[in-house]
Length: 153
Image 1 (cartoon, rainbow, N blue to C red):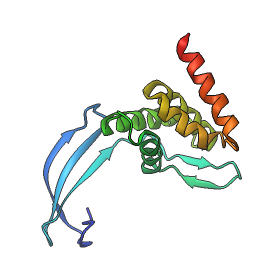
Image 2 (spheres, rainbow, N blue to C red):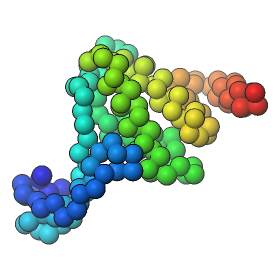
Image 3 (tube, rainbow, N blue to C red):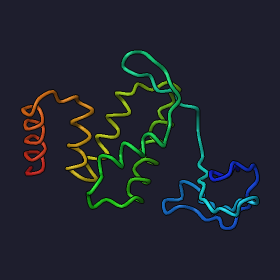
Image 4 (tube, rainbow, N blue to C red):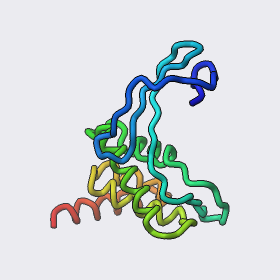
């Protein structure tokens, strides 16, 4: 594994253990050249996924991008990094088990919306404001109102 600090090609595994939800192996590594320590994760990948953007462009699915989006939506909310990791794993598993190699970005957004709705309503509204492309405050207000109404039921 290449060292993120010096770029050396060899590192030594110091510790390995499964993540909380057993979806990955967490490995603590140390670079043989500079001595820097870093963590890597090893995950099962059922199939190569390609994301089809709304304008038709295709790009490989990046789990890190999904985690970043979830983290931004959950920023300054009472949501642990482990909850974000678990949600990202669940969404990725759902995508891989669909049986399709190409998935529309809209469909991924729907999975994220469903996951955030169950996790944190503020994060759900934040993500929705970008995903649904609210153009004015009224759009935001209407959506937030519908979330409050649904919570009362």
